[in-house]
Length: 422
Ligand SMILES: Cc1ncc(COP(=O)(O)O)c(C=O)c1O
Ligand SMILES: [Zn+2]
Image (cartoon, rainbow, N blue to C red; front, side, top):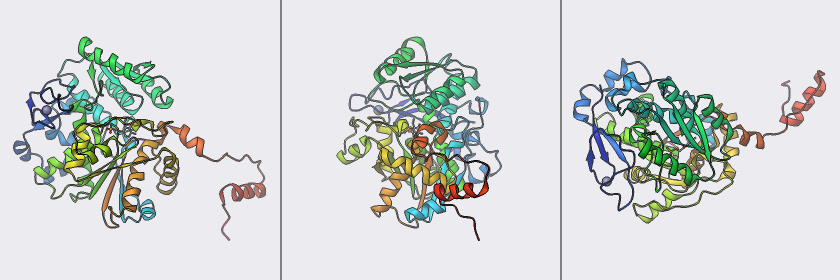
């Protein structure tokens, strides 16, 4: 059973009931927009949510039902969560790290971490009598919403922008979503806002600016990243958790998961959260000490399209501040190389955006902030299959041969440096 009691403002602590509130806190909006977040009765939850009780439960997100929104046990599931935590020794050695782990979220049903958000958000859709799901997305958020809406038997409308990466858009269409592209990003929010306000659409993504982040119940699904990581590391939390960040939904949600575990007395320390970003709005806000997040244009053309937003959110800033974390920038031009090293060195093919997190880890190692023996968890947010064009553009041409062995071996040597062992 869920111990959800209502929603609370991340900044001013104003509290609300279990309501469909997706546009942030009305009490402190004048200062800077802030999201609401679900609040739970942790004292009551502690009686059921324990290391011992978790041991006997089946894998998957619903094993954490006390700390997730109600109805999660009956929600439409595709087998989300329970993703592996891979110790990347070879890649760690490149960076001078003994304990580099990758939480491989590409293993989720639609190929990205957004399935955690979509699953949890859709779990609440029935309670709020939602009849249509609406999402504004060029990528993974749209694909995940489309998949879970299909599973729940609800129609889904995805507002994307003209020219968005085609594999993910095709994926949305495959799930039966009604995909419509707008010519400008502003128009997609304008239409979704109208859909939510006037047509009763159930939003799973942000839909106005300055953004507060996504559906709060959906964001809570990301807490399970922290719960799983703690279980996988035998309740010894990492020193650092690094994520590629756009609105920072996942960064905040994961931080909140660690925070709850600490409040429940299940862990003794909490990791520092790190945002890897393309535009740098969180880094600028951290430096300024202000609550408002500045708008900074993301450099284009985008390689990391999924995280190339101009403005992050207060919830991400909050998680960075209270965890004594950091924000570091990644450059578009370094991502294809990092993608190759991770895929060829560890067998994990990640979406270019996801590699921003490894770029940020590299920066913090160079600065000496992350030390050799620190435990570092990097979230690989999505599969490289979401955008193969970037990889293909940087890949060598494939040589063509006939069936003769000697020229074939010569070609392998020339093209790839391969030699038969003596
Ligand atoms: C692959 C990938 N990584 C990271 C992000 C950033 O997610 P968030 O908005 O939760 O920061 C996205 C968002 O769409 C994404 O698709
Ligand atoms: Zn508030």
